[in-house]
Image 1 (tube, rainbow, N blue to C red):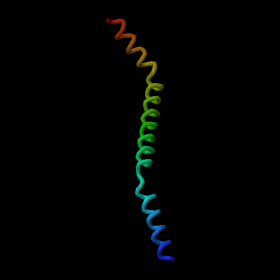
Image 2 (image 1 turned 90 degrees about the horizontal axis):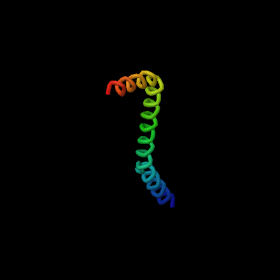
Image 3 (image 1 turned 30 degrees about the vertical axis):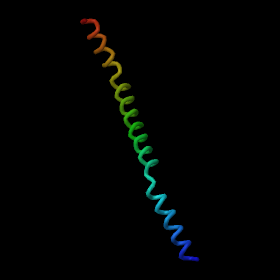
Image 4 (image 1 turned 90 degrees about the vertical axis):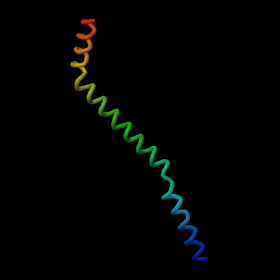
Length: 61
């Protein structure tokens, strides 16, 4: 009886540790969020400079 319980618990533990699909999605989500934060920070910091640069290019055309 105790052996069956130990085998059952071991099988359940193996199934939980082998399921990595959710982990991969979370990692991709974190990477995407980090990239978004970096892009927003760069655009906020350099927003005025980029606007002036595009205005100069537009005027020269």
